Length: 306
Ligand SMILES: [Zn+2]
Image (cartoon, rainbow, N blue to C red):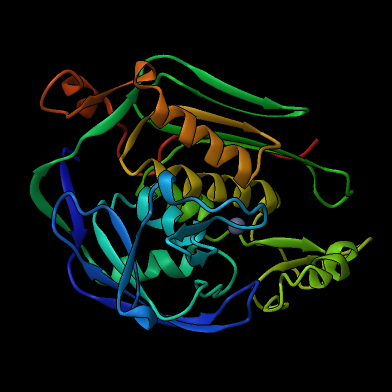
């Protein structure tokens, strides 16, 4: 799609935040070209926070934004849906400090976008095309971004739990692949860590309805939607964090036991070093790429856990 997009008509939902347990109303509203994804705290006179790496707040448990002291958290599932479905411009009106968790996946957001419709605008898209690799390593965790003619992600997770273990997901990200292969994958949490997280004031809104809960020997609220739902959810989270680039990417991202902190560091370092990328429209240098882009559900290599 060489042209920018927005949504056709407003759509709304409501629900409770995972960490704060605060109830919020969320509304997506069409926005003009070159707006990007902009949150509006309608409970604070419409204060705007752009979904951009420069506004990232340094917290580890969820992707959060902070601008002039105004905070907004758990934005990654909505951003993953908007970014993967190719919505470049939208206002996200929200009346609380955390987005609703809904069922813990990005599926409800994809359904909202289906209901809203996607409208093409006249302005061309400006892609960020990776021309030199960038890798970040932190102990046994790492993330890298490499040149590619489409947006691809590869995500490897390894949890010391017999029901999770190692899972690896790789796919070209577009509306069809995201909707079918990643969006339904839910957030997950371990019973063992529950008390510690609660003591830190987190997951106050967590329940068996908005996260997969994993006990020592069983899934408390199965069945799983995919055998490797955990790896798929982490790939979803990674895409949501990459959306903070603020523009569509042409590049391949590989995460190895990475998390929000590494994902957002990659975005910040990438944007800070213009020798790593070029800005392009399909009209110019990347024209042949558009025709080679696979249609519909494309190749998705999904490796079951070892
Ligand atoms: Zn998540």
